[in-house]
Length: 243
Image 1 (cartoon, rainbow, N blue to C red):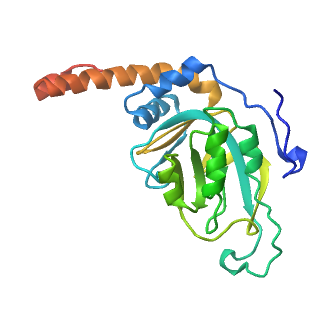
Image 2: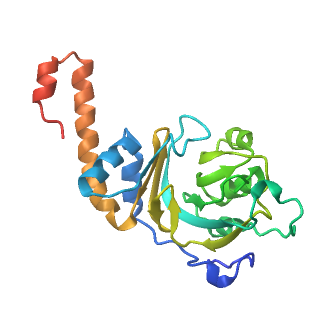
Image 3: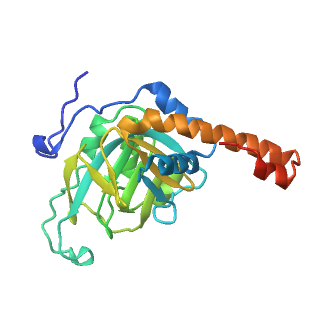
């Protein structure tokens, strides 16, 4: 069924209604990597791709979670001069991530380039996002209701928390455009891979190529761990080629 915008944003601000999608077998291939973001990071080093944000920059709200799925993007901008002094501004709600929720397909990842200091997403928005199929969110900014994400078992990576609403302090200006997350450019349909160590954004057109290398690294690491566990001498570990 064709997607129909909700009218929260001008139609031209929604750059695409349908994501360009990777074959499902590529996505499944990334899902089974043992050390998800570590292996992807090593693979990106080999290919000269910059696409990893470590967890000390963008930590997970809930430990132990991992997600793999295509990015559906949102871009917010600051609407007021000072976030903490916005009590007297026009109270028109200009937050529009519901347009993204409306476009979501099961397995998508919500990726938000946001505004620090106010909430770019709250518990009710997250509840709708999960219901619509989003498997988690990556937010380059602050959010509120962290306990809500934990209680609904919905993974979120963000820069921090705030109780301050973003409804009239920021404005959603684009859905499914190019965003920048902690210095990494992310396009709609790029593959998002996130775990406790960080977030990796795999360019869609390089995903198949990168997966080949990642599988080789993953298999080598698995063999080396097995050798370590069975007591292989350090000299032998150093002399064997695992990758």
